[in-house]
Structure formats: C-alpha cells, structure tokens
Amino acid sequence: MDIIVNRIDAGKYWTDSGASFGVLPRAIWGKEVQTDELHRRMLALNLLLICLPERVILVDTGLGNRLSEKQISIYNPSPFMLPVSLAELGVRDIDVTDVILTHLHFDHCGGVITNFGDKERLTFPRAKYWIQKSEWEMAKHPDDLNKASYDFEHQLYLLEQSNQYELIEGNLDIAEGVTLIKTGGHTVGSQIVEIDTSSEFYIYPADIIPTFFHISLAVTSAYDLSRTETYKAKLYIYSRLKEKKGTLLLNHDPQRWEVNFSEIKYCK
Image 1 (cartoon, helix red, strand yellow):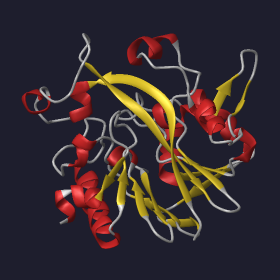
Image 2 (cartoon, rainbow, N blue to C red):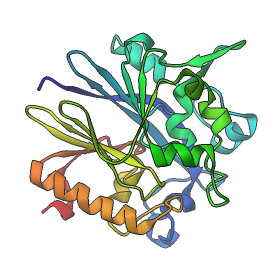
Image 3 (cartoon, rainbow, N blue to C red):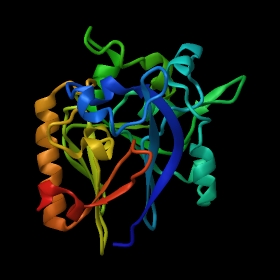
Image 4 (spheres, one colour):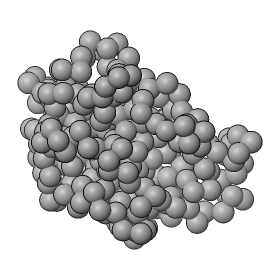
C-alpha cells in the first residue's frame, strides 16, 4: 500500500507541568523537564498527515486561531502553524479529504474552525471528520467532571451545522492501511490511529502517550479520565508495536516525533 506519513507542525503552547504528569511527584520529573516561571512546560503540536493515492488524511487540528484572551494568557501559544506547514508540503485546505479527531479537547480540535476576521469557516471545507460518538456526545453535553474540558459552541458548532462529520462506535478501518482504535482513557471517546504501509507500521497514540516521558506505563496525566484505561491502551500499543516492529509517533513532545519499538522496554 502506497502510504506517505508526515509530521505537521501546528505550533506550540505551554501547559501546567504538574497536571501533565498527574500523580507523578515533581521530585521524579522536575530535573528532566524544563519549566517557566509559572511552572508550565512547553508542548509541541505534532499533527499527522497521511497521504494515500486518493485520500489526504489529517489527524487532529491543533489550537486554531480562535482562542480567547484568557486562553492565550494561560497557554501562551505560538502562532497557528497548521496552514503554513501544510502549504510547505503542497497541501491546500481543499485537498484534505478526511480529518480524524483523536478527541475533542481544544488543543486537538481548535483548528477545525478558522477565524478570518469578519467571518469563520471550516478550515478544511471538503473534509469528512471522524469522531467517536461517545466523544461527540460528551462535548455537546459535558457532565460536571468534564465541563472545563469541552466548549462545544466555541469549537465545533460550524462542524455540526455542516453535517460533514461521521460518528463512529469502536474500531474502524477508514482506508486501506488506516485504522482507528477506540481506547478511552484520556477521554471517554479517545481514539488512536494505526497506519500499516507496505514497509512500515506506525501508531499515533495522541494523548494516551503525548511525550517520551509518558511512555512509562505508570505515567499518566491529570487530564486522563481513567488511568486504568490509559494503562490498558498502552499495553495494547506496545504489543502491536512489538508484533509489527513499528514506530510510535508522539503528538506533544518538542524533541521527539518518532520512537522505534526497539527503544521501548515494554516492546522487548
């Protein structure tokens, strides 16, 4: 199968370091992770572009350019780099046929909409958007535990009006060699992406394993709804990487993008 996999730089932002590592004490991660004066760490927005003969599939959309002043002060984001990074590869907004949303937190789906000053529109007007049904329903009607994580009107109202989304339940092959696997864990409807080319195998785990530090089975973020489901998802990921001699793709690590299975002790 002729599949090309590319990293897309959608920018960077800063997030609370303690929340990033959950129950892991600062004494363990503090010497290895650089933080600013507000105890934030910088995270990359490494998106995934999958190019097939008849499809151009983007995985997640980054922060977008529609953040509120409060969000900007909290997260100190870089400029929204997604359109520029795609253009560098010769990809236009109308070329993208599919957008996979691993989950609907703002740093993954904010770029669904682009603000053009006096109007807004879908960033990828011809794409079909693939979302787990349970994630969509949580974004529309968040419970008290999730209200701070979702703002449906702000992020996704144009998508709902366009009717260009597909709600799925569970695992699904959306193209030959491209499979969505529902894991839960980070959110109720988190999904990861497996890419099986003729010569390589990749897993894009999104926030199940956002950085190299999170490869450890014991390290989960405070944002994970279920540490148990995240743990089980990691076990699945490592078994698949070992089986296929594959590569892990890290969506938030500023230094690392690809991690070969041979570097992961759980794959040996």
